[in-house]
Length: 224
Image 1: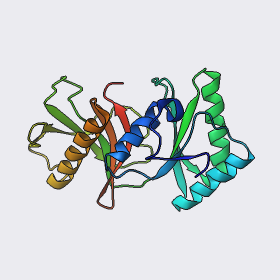
Image 2: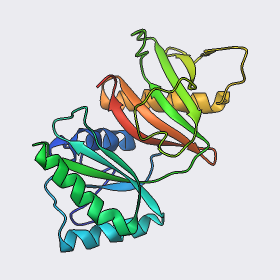
Image 3: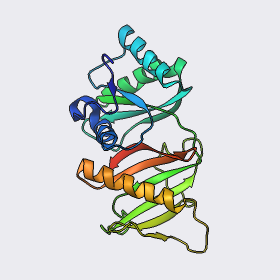
């Protein structure tokens, strides 16, 4: 691939940043992820790299991508931009690199396909609201543009509590029909357990179901 890295290549934080490192470890754990590639921290947009980025974009066979900054060290300012089309891709990556360096926080750039799903959300390998270590929390909501690209709270999120020990499920409200069926909830349960084991720490995963298939979009250390 030349200067660019696949999402299952290097997990060196100094090369791909913390977000990139977590994504690589998640991919290696065998989880299905939104396809893409990483522009390493020390690779800056120039003529050669620009052509390489566009070639990899074309291989994805998509019209739009999501861009995320992956800084070292990790900070709360992880910039996310989407949807980006091909004709704006190089300009946007250049902007993100320059913006990060102005803050003395050089970043790798994670490029992933922009998915259009039925519903999406987050899953936490421990309960971030009660700090219960034996509970996994699934948050789900209907898909909307940018719905998985920000961290704003949504009062309409459905919340499902999963017993971490045996995978048994408790709905936030037993009177309402769940957005996720039992198989989908179990897929998420297995995914977050795999990710937590691979990373060696509690994690939160951003996820989406697209045409019935589970995709992991982003991995973060829980409460990081």
